[in-house]
Length: 285
Image (cartoon, rainbow, N blue to C red; front, side, top):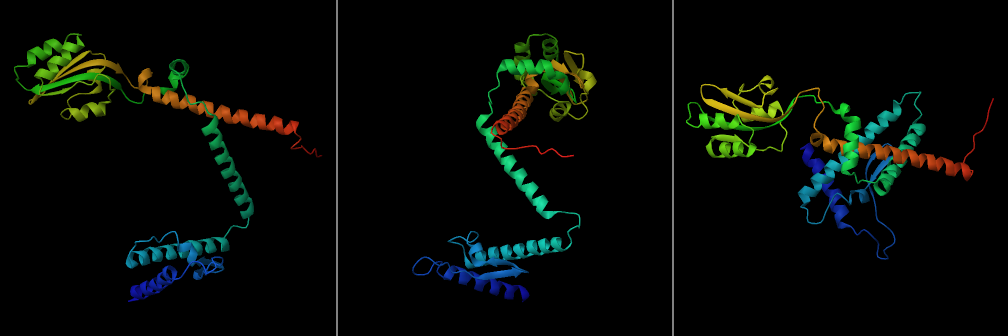
């Protein structure tokens, strides 16, 4: 019953809002009325104009207006409570001024970066940055590239797979795996983690120790025989390959450029202000 009464009140507000003309006949004076109040704060009918759209049903519109009004009330009640309980040592005006200054500077610097930052990073720059900073990108886990083939236990394909995976002819390995394995993984461009590998194989099939230092791994259990050709292997806490962190290198280079751009702009602004006498330092005892 309480909900229905509230809905009727909101409906009346909404009908009044939608039903009245926004402007008088001469188009100059806006008709407006107070919808809700919290202390000295007032919510006007005109403020609801952007949340109600033509084509909405009265039920949907009333629900949206109802939610907006009560959110507004709760927010302003919280503001009023915060104002009453503000700590004595907090200077609200100072905080507002600092926040305003931070927003202005942030948006200005953002525009500077968008319009002035050189975003082209050459291969030579990335290669040089890699050599100078690669120790900063040590791996937190093993990384490798491999080819995988799996066949049922006692399959007649096991001898040919074993023989082929023991060789270094990658094309032949891929062809045999494609044609003879019940399951194969042949992406030689993607780096894998142990988690990636374990998601493709029966649980507990392979461990890091099985791959480290080996070019070929042959494992069997009661149901399967697994062949892995290890193409590249990088252990944890070692330097990662360039192509694995190339994206990170680009981001780092651009980040350093951005910092330098803003630093240079501040310096230029300072020297221009000095030349134009836009500031002075007042000496004091």
